[in-house]
Length: 361
Image (cartoon, rainbow, N blue to C red; front, top):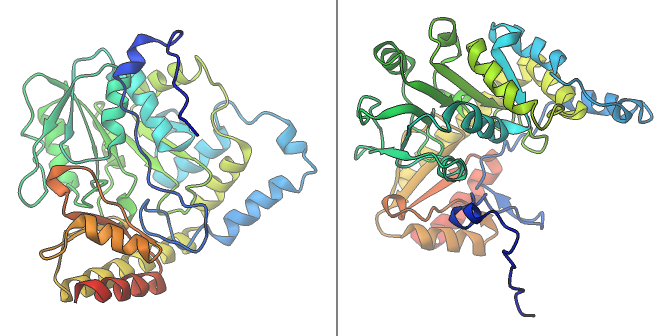
């Protein structure tokens, strides 16, 4: 079957310049071990499942009606959980959507944006979509970066903390010092992975007006399939996000996602237990990989970045996939010999190690 050629007659000409983000592979067959997109292997809590079922058991009454336009019920629980005000919270369909609103409302037409040279590859795609010029922050040999190594013409900086590729994080003091010295620069911190060992910067919004934090329910709370995220920041920044959101979608978060998010935040016991299991599995996998010749970066996320001196990243990726284990290999020269491995269950980690040993040792 020949590939149909696209007619671009009615396209916005700017679309030809775009480089869309490529998400991690999602195999349709269930017999794969997925260690490529940093999903939570333990899934959501029983309380979350029950909250979703409660909405579904209303004979369609709840689903017949539109959700709350401003997600006030969810915001109330987020407010209580993180000790911030309702007007300091913005919610959306996953932190990717929240970030897209940030690009539209806060980053576009404001000058140069600085991002680390190795980071979440969705950022460059969004920057190109909104015609924002990017300045790359060089990483050191140990894959860390210094916020002070910014060009003088930067107006905003965006980074994942921990880094979405390496798992390495900056501490809160480093970020606070930068905020103090640079009140004219907007800092957006993507805390998708912060719950696995890094320091959150949410408390800094009480003192600084130039910081915005984005969070997701996909990783530590096991709700990647629901698409739910939020931002926390000064009410002026949040108001800007709402102006954009309410200009084309006044109902961003559906009732099922809202109910799941509320139940997740209230179930602290499950959250703490789940998080600790993943951290223990990360430490176990890191330790075992080092015994068979891997270099593993110090991660504070629910994944690790690893490389082997004798086996290329491409071969590791392909050999694992032959054995129905999927990890992430990036098309980036600086990390071409590295693979990112999501932390699975103990059984999944042991299966991964067994397959690796079969072609490495």
